[in-house]
Image (tube, rainbow, N blue to C red):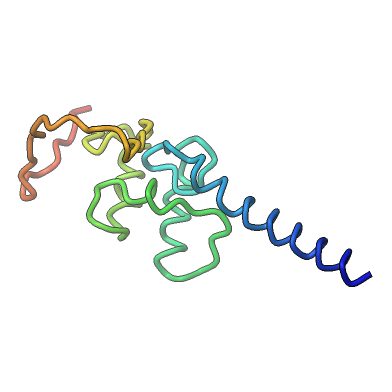
Length: 126
């Protein structure tokens, strides 16, 4: 009886471990701005970021997708999403899929253009 209980315990531990590892390794891409992970960028994503910043419960939260401007999670990320939804210029490529490169593959070394951090955003004329 003890042997069966021990085998059952080992199987449960193995299933829990595999269940925790698979979702992490299977996520090789995400949608920038999709903070709640539902596949689309909506006003709920800005709300989820705001809730996270004031430490309210956020059942589903993707920190990589929420940090749209790459300077860490802050209120400007929610603002960028709101600006995107209001159809202002999309300088941070919100609602575009970001693919995480495989670390075992060699990466190209093409220099990327840098953006002036003091550059003001362009407001479209209506």
